[in-house]
Image 1 (cartoon, helix red, strand yellow):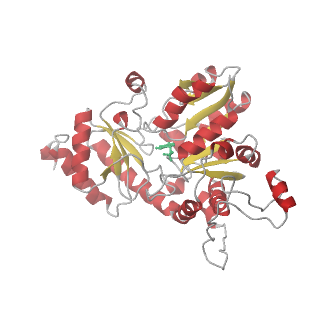
Image 2: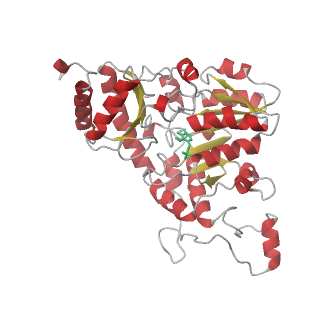
Image 3: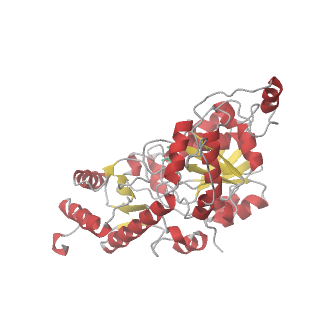
Length: 404
Ligand code: PLP
């Protein structure tokens, strides 16, 4: 039976301090102890249930972490102030000077820049590979490799990683498989497929209201303890700590994630079919034309569909900009980076979220400058939205008028 992530979230029960249906927010950076000995024991990590200082952990962050661990089916989780806070800490926890990483070459531009430009300063090198080719991934492993890094569904090209296949390779070579699951929460459960560490930018679908940044690392208790260690834990020492007020608000939004994901997926599937029929080169994992459509089907939790992200290629950056500006003017969505909002968001990744990737590498990986990335919204009547988008496409000369 497939994993049922939303049911695991549903099964959690919280009570607030005064019996509230939401847990109380821990509005404190530091915590008192009735005895000095308990404070010492807490520092040593031996006083379960006691809080010390909110950079280490706080009740509100633990509640949110518990829900995210339930969603991903991991022992536990640690929330962070942003997706990058979670990603950079997890990588720096696992890799030290002299170590090597094998990473997918199509990943979020910020993660790419971190691995390409930042970590080499600490003598951590990364080989970027086509993650869909397992033989290429295995061939890139060296004696210094510690980590394989990928996104379940990649930003922005929507390449799909064969997580079970990658996990086999990781286990064979004693490596840690880190999967960024930001694009496919609920739809894919990487831990069930053998991933060791699962990361999310909570900024996107999970929070869903584009009002905060946030991140999470899901994994074993041992790994999360290591991240939180007061002596050498990357999350504790680098300090990407989420504020309690924010974690409380994200937890409340998470309760509707399953309903939102179903609607994002339904709307994206509808538009992907229509755009493809209209003759646009359309990439969406739910389309049979997607090279990894069959693979996605074997990995997915079918209740939640193929996700809310799709791309179309309109041929040039000028056409892309013209179309996006017109769609925004007609209130069909926002010309904005990020994803997972109730409104559709669109951007041209080559000149925005992936601009950290040099032009020749963008070309090599198939990131053309006319590519528009859509995060499809929760529109009630997607047929109506499509008709309005189609009108915009005609007005900018991307569709012939006689097909009206
Ligand atoms: N991972 C992916 C796949 C992303 O798309 C992003 C942001 O766009 C991040 C990580 C970084 O997350 P944040 O902006 O919350 O730091």
